[in-house]
Length: 92
Image 1 (tube, rainbow, N blue to C red):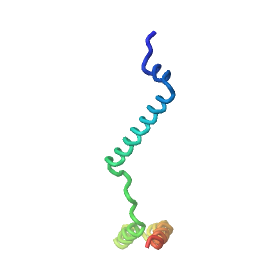
Image 2: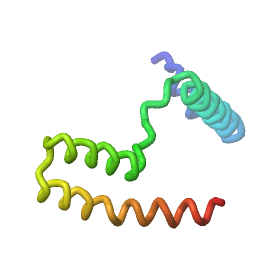
Image 3: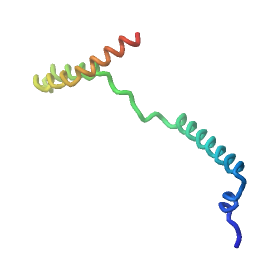
Image 4: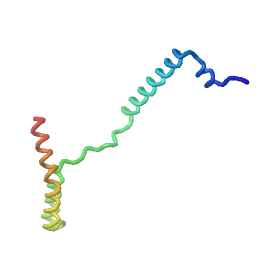
């Protein structure tokens, strides 16, 4: 019976197997790096809470949001605003 390529591969000396696995790992790593550089960034940066609050304040002044809705939004954004202020204080 004729040996297939895989049969010959597994019967090769361990040094050759390690070499081919290392080459494969290097090629996969290079491919991963290239794809990461070429592919556009799909993750968009989240708008700061301050921007959201300003937009909601505008909607509230136009009558689109009720007083209760605006209060709820402010309450929900308060923690995020505080975190952003703390982060800005640490950065600069």
